[in-house]
Length: 241
Image (tube, rainbow, N blue to C red):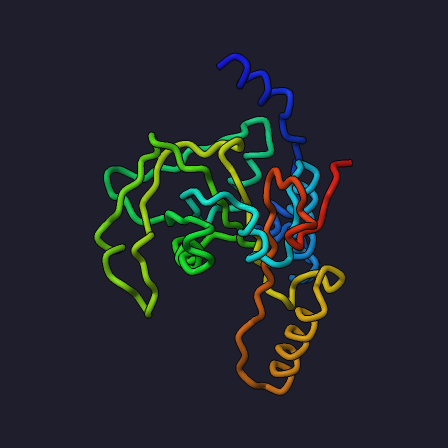
């Protein structure tokens, strides 16, 4: 254990403290436009993750192909908790009030399941930070407290929920395999969009301008830890400054 502990300490994350403008924007501390604060929040998370050795992927399916064929826990997480992982705390606890547990994650194997079970991970949570949604993938340990509750035995709206679980326990940075960001395309920095994403966002904005109903375009970015050669899978190699 001593060697493992020392190795972890030597590779401690670079701590990032979010500006008050991001954290307190929901309290109307700031009056800038919604797109500006959303862009600032996304860029902060991107810079934090890439500076800590995570490789960025615009193609999330390509990102998942870099992951091992092992079952992991995936959950939609409050972005404020994700920030704790890159602070002095480096961990936080997931729990419930009393004995009333509910589903809050999925068990997922990236090679066997592909992306089909991840929709449930996004659905088992409501939190965001300035329209930025975070989903984390954790290495599964034998001691993890996971339950399959009755609500996971019934399909809702055509969704297969067999992988949905209830998790409680500690989340530490060393267990994290990937972190996904999801941002509405019309609030995403245009300079960060791919050509295809630009076209889809433009089509959405045109429909809105014409007074027509349209589903917002969601932009996904995946950040994978410890990818030996991200470019091989279509990712962007990032070096810590």
